Amino acid sequence: MAHPIRHFLTITNHRHQVIIHCAKAGILWQGLRHDLSKYSPTEFIPGAKYYQGDRSPNEKERELYGCSAAWMHHKGRNRHHYEYWNDYNPKTKNIENVEMPVRYVVEMFCDRVAASKIYNKGSYTDAHPYQYYLRIKGKNRMHPNTEALLCSWLEMLRDEGEEKTFSFIRSLDKRDKR
Image 1: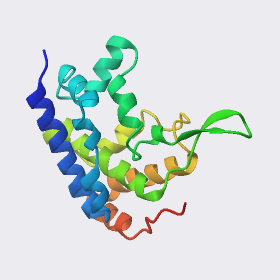
Image 2: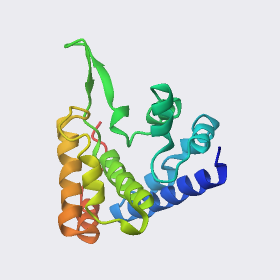
Image 3: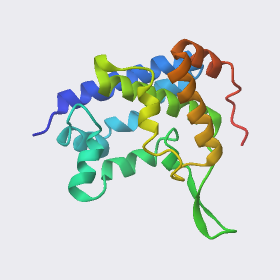
Image 4: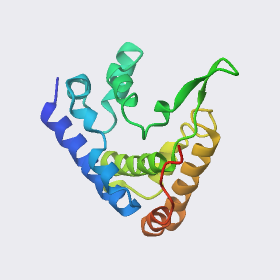
């Protein structure tokens, strides 16, 4: 059964939490534009159809069909997902991970913290985003420099808390170098 209102509330609450985190991290404008594609019919309709409340609807769609069309749409439009940063390398003739600009790694961090808060609700701890990250750690899913940077911030959050981690991130130079 579809749950359009519950899905709308979940993605909107998540987006608002990301905006708060992006403001704390010094990238408010990025936060205001975060995940707007989730409101498009291509993403919203499957999201409502496969809504579960405790995990991404994309996971249910993937279980049923072997892939998620909504996720394919989403990752191709949102630069804070490491999956966006894959390209053909003409030297090796392979698709390879590309290092993400710092400002998108910051947004990815904010996104992961917000998602952990939304899905874990009252049981959330600062260790949850790191525990979720462990599912992909070391599996060559993102550029090694991107992975090391994200991991360091998730460990800092886990070990030293939100205030210190966001303060540190806010102090970084987040301008794109390319």
